[in-house]
Each structure stands twice: as structure tokens, then as C-alpha cells.
Image (cartoon, rainbow, N blue to C red; front, side):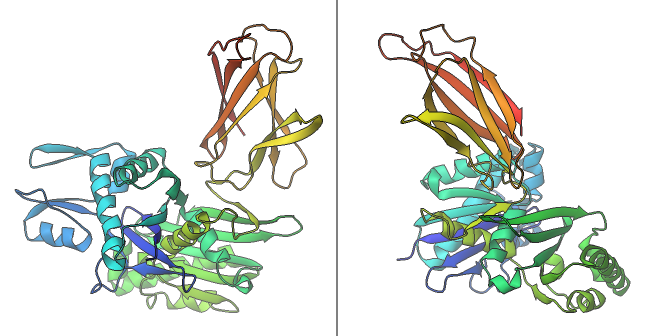
Length: 420
């Protein structure tokens, strides 16, 4: 039986699930039930009055509509504010509600695909938020899913991996994405940076000020206004660019008939694709790639949430000077962790090199170890633990491990955070 390879996109308005089919090597969207054609599950939750039953999506709307329960929406925003909701006299934290919602979302593929064996999961968010990601880890831990099978991505990463999973002819020059939802209008642009080995693929993201509420599309005048706004944005953003393909996603593009002028412009000399679930599908492609020891994508992928610099140290190993890499450019900052042990040789300073992609200029970061006990040369071993607080901030801990029985460890720890 095939294990589940899933991409789960969780947004304030709608959430979506996609699974990777290992037979067709493609990602497919999943609806809440077989009867529901849409893969867009409203990110709402409702508790039925007088029971312990919870509903999500359209079922939650129905339960609240008939007065049978209390509904809570905007779960992602609520979590960002560390808010609470009181239901039948009980106060629930945003973390509590998200945990219930995510549990029920994960029950969808289990029910639809007939297996509860999770091989690899990628949760996708508009932006990576440590609080949200910690909640996801707690939920998956409770479900018994090993930590190494759970990964996080933002929309820029999911779009990048979705596009480079398609035929190269679609993105060999440039590709872009318009995402129109209740959270606004977002534009993503993928560029292949030539002349680098390995090849660099970069995605730039911009939340456009011209974003509008989808409610205006409920009237003819509003549709014309929305079309005018989109057309203006497209002309500004795409002029003089060799855009091979254009992707449209989000609730606003579920039906594109209202945007005739915009479509006329973007379809000129470009291939255009429209559909929901693109970010979830990108997550599913990432989930499949995580199951391999070596990635199937021989590129350095740069975007929000990915490191733009390589962090390394110069060390001596087996009589030769070598570069020890702690984190590589293109790595996911949330998962880029490293630990190494070194013996100090005529120094009480650790130096780290920061090398940006495409630049020969290196920045040097230093940590002074004067606080550690004074010992003869080569009798102090230190453990270096590096982790990232964001894609531009690294935290380094150095632990004094001494040197065997002759020079016991003091247990002292020095920590420094650096902007990179």
C-alpha cells in the first residue's frame, strides 16, 4: 500500500490538500469528500452544541448556519495574535483550535486514500511563522508521525518547487504567478540565473497594494473594476520581460471569466495556467523529494524562507585545511541545523565565513571564547551548534567539552546571534 506523500496548504480563508501519486509522478488535489469537486476547504471550525463533535469546512458553516454550533474563522490570524475563542463557556486558545483543524484535515487523505501511513508531509503557509510551525509539530507528534517526516514551506517555496517540477520549457526564461485571495493579491516571479554552477533559480515575492476584496466580484461593476486593476498590474509587472508561463491561483481565479481584459493581456505570447491548489501541489512535490537521500532538483533554490548564504568554517582535518559547511545557500532556514566538534589550536576565537550566492565577498563572524577555562594547547574540545531564527539570522552556541579525564568539561555555554 502506498504511503501518503502530502502537501497541505493552510491559509486564513481556505486550506487545500494535495497528494503525490508515485505511479504517475504527479500531484493531485483532494476534496473533503468524494462528492465535493472543490479541493478548497474553508479554514473554519465549529463545535456542535452540547457535544464534543467538531466540524471543519463547509460542514462547519452548515452547523453554524442552522444554529447547532459556534463557529470560529481566521484561525491563522488568531494564532498569529495568540488569541482565544470562548465556546460554551470554555476558553480555547488558537493553538487548541488549529490542532483540531489540522487533525481533521489529515483525516481527509486517510479516509479518501485508505491508509494512515504518512511517509512525508509538507505544510505550506503564506509566511513561515514559528508559532504555527510549532503547533504543527505538536499535532503530528500526537499522531505518532516521526519528526523527520514533517516539513514546512511558504508559498514562495511551494510555487518554486511546483514550477521546476514541470517541463523545463515552461520556466527556462521566466515564470510568474498571480495569487488572488481574501488575503490580498500576491505576485511571484521566478528567474533562472544563468552562468552559475549549480544553476540558481530564484523567486521574488511581492504583496501588491492593488489587492481588493473578492466581494467586489459579486457585481458587474465590481468585476470590471477588478479586471481593470489586474490588467494594470500585469502591464506594469510583465512589460519587457520574457515570461514563458503565467500561473493563476487562489479563490479569485477559481472562475476567470470576469477578468477578460487581464486574460487577453497575459495570454499574448505566453502560456497561461489557471487552477486552485497550486501551493498544495508544490508541497506534495517537495514531500516526494524529501523521501530521497539526494534531491531530484540540482539547483540552488532562493526565495523567502531559504538561506541566501553558505555558512562555513576553515578547519584542519587529516593534516589538510578544509572548508566545513554548517549550512548551504538554498537550504530551508527552519530545517538548517548543524552540530560539529573541533579542538582549539592556538586560538580562543571561532571564525565563521558567510558567503552569499554569486558573490566572492565573504563576511566573517567571530565568537570569543575567553570565558572558557585556560588549558594547554589542543586540550579544549568545543561543540558548535548552529540553528536559524529566520532566513537572515543565525544562532550559534559553543559548549566547552574539555578534553577527556585530564581536562573535564566545564559545561560552559557561549551563545551569539548574528544577522547574515
